[in-house]
Length: 97
Image (spheres, rainbow, N blue to C red):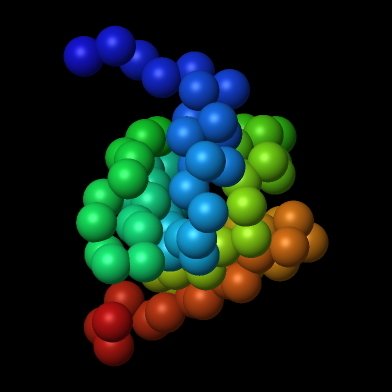
């Protein structure tokens, strides 16, 4: 499978003229995310470096979205950064989600 570049990913997401929902599984070194369309269809699955620079590069150009992530070591700074980038960040307790 051909690896998608950040530009290709952003072009794909920007072509989707709809509200996106993103599930973000935050890890210590890398995080996985899955982008869902309005009907719940999977549009994209990728990984991103768990750093402020990696998070901002990936989600900075993404259209305003609802992003859900679990509580954890990195969830405070990740959720604050996502909100600063204009996204709706939902931090859910792992046992309750």
